[in-house]
Picture 1 (cartoon, rainbow, N blue to C red):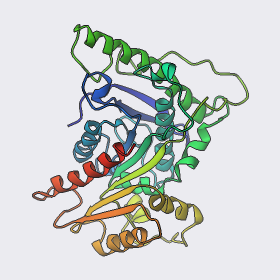
Picture 2 (picture 1 turned 180 degrees about the vertical axis):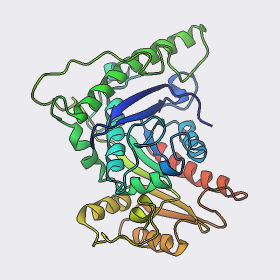
Picture 3 (picture 1 turned 120 degrees about the vertical axis):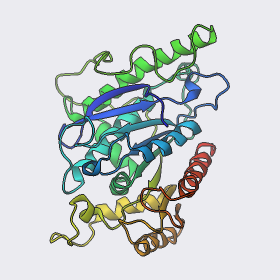
Picture 4 (picture 1 turned 120 degrees about the horizontal axis):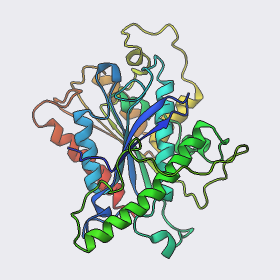
Length: 350
């Protein structure tokens, strides 16, 4: 199971400002000598459907996310609107939830850019030839459905590049930069204390773990104009992990309806682009042949179509006798083995 988060915070959704509850977990390498070195790779993991009890405390998501944290990824989780302590209610279209996911990806990308737990940025400025880090976008069930609907990563991050001052995007970026500055100092102090033998290693930094109890310093915000682009920002390499994806149920499940939507229409270009990103970038989709929400034939056809395209980096794995909740004997370990193999190869790829 996941440990206590390194810190918690709230950010506004870029969609409409709805407050979203978020958690960030630092890997062991931040605090423990001899742990696998951090390569600046990170993952965002999205949870199942809120009206059915889904939140970032979902037990299965917790188990899968922990494996990624153990692999050395910095991990972020968040509650969609209507889940846990996030404000608002679940939508009928999933578009606001795409905005929620976009918001946290924007936070994580800029947090990672500014975070410097080992002091490497000062000693060794980033090289133009440096391989960009991996930013994996993951989801289970409804969270996987929203992940498939995200635009390509460059489009997800574009609103944060030079946002209007006072906008939700500017608030998110400034909050990410403030937390990164604070956590950089806290981690470096914690590492020094561990080296002196004054305390045991802990992912939770000693300066406070909650925005409510100890907020980071407020960043200076111009009254007008736009934020300047982040200096030296390097676009991460996207990757995608889809556990029990709800392929084909974007409308039906989001509306909790078993009746075909009267608004059904031809797939627009933005949905084509969202699906194409799964082909162009490393993607793992893992599902069971006994999933009660999606007919296995539909999943097989989807996997076959994406994996057969020229140069496709999409891979789908079907696990026999596995249901949507991975409760059948032996199937959970089979799924986790696939997730760990996929994540490990990405982590060790540079």
